[in-house]
Image 1: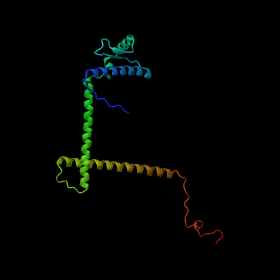
Image 2: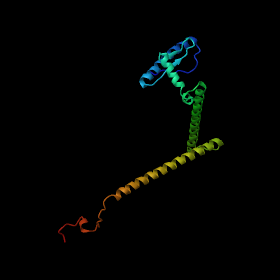
Image 3: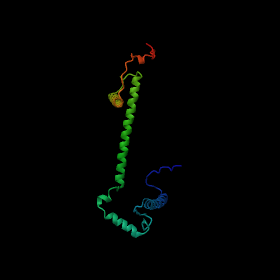
Image 4: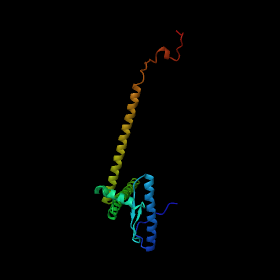
Length: 196
């Protein structure tokens, strides 16, 4: 059974928060170790716990972690911060993504409303009570559908032209057939050799 999606928000209950931190920290260290072994990459993790005096690190050897951090710090700042993000940047990206999704869904809903109006019109409904915005939307929808139909017709024309061209080429490569007049005696079904 799939695990329930966790709502990412600060845990208010102190003991629950501590327990979650302990479990998640252990899981994080395990994941860092797994990715290091499975993908043969250098990785380290440093987690500061407000309840412990020393941070928890992986690999357990402080020298290996220190060496990796020094290697990271020796890189140019643009490489260090290339994929870094703080809480504010993360939230800004999420808001931008959700705004794009909302805009797309709004446009989809608007198109569905206009499509329903067009279908009602085809069924005999009058458009006297339709507002200017809706009338403009219906016209835009009809124009876009007409454009799609025109493009499909043009595509089909091109496909048929290509098909006809390939058939013509194929026929031009066939050996020439000798034309025989159907009125000649050997094509006459009633003609028999020996008859005068």
